[in-house]
Every structure is written in structure tokens, then in C-alpha cells.
Image 1: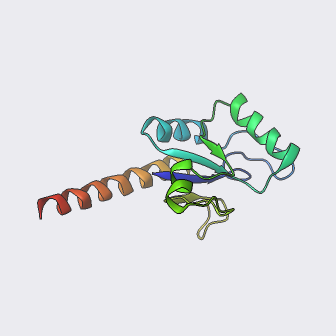
Image 2: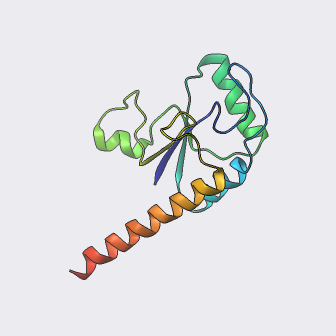
Length: 127
């Protein structure tokens, strides 16, 4: 699954333009998602030096990611374009409707989505 994750207020506890401490459990959940084979795109309004600072912070805090503000190359190839809008199966953002769940709840949600998808795929194979 391609997952787009907001940076400010989602992966860290600080407020723009600063960068705070890692959000509780964020690094562990990001690593668990990566270990399960998910493609992780950090999705942020930061650019230039502010984006470089965010990337360095992610690296310093051992938070895995595949891309920053850029689509998965496989998606770009499928659509024959690299849109400014990040293409993902799931978006994690502190501004989402209902607010940001805890990172352990996010992991549970992703695992449920995966299980539901596998069950759906298994049902299609049986018919």
C-alpha cells in the first residue's frame, strides 16, 4: 500500500516552522509499516531549506520513508505523469476529519485494511 504521511503535527509534536520531538510511537509505527512492505511518502508543505531540515530530522530520528513530496515512480509510470498531488491508498494527517488517531491506532487501522483487502482478493479467486 502507498501511504502518504504529513510531517508537521503528524510525525512530530512541534509547530511550523520549528520541528519538535517525534510524535509518540510514530517512529515505531513507521518502521512497522515499512517492515510490512508499505511505500511511505512524507507529504509536506515544506520546501527548500525547511524541507531539507525535515528530511534531516527524519534521518536523525530513524524514521523510514521512501520519498518526500514525490510520487512512487510506479504510479508515475502508470499515469504517464507526476502530478503535484501525491497519489496514495491512504493519507495520514493531523488535519484529517476527526483529528489524528494515536500511532498504534493507525497501525491497527492499516492492518485491518490489509486483512479486508486480502479477504476480498481471496473471495475473488474463489469465484
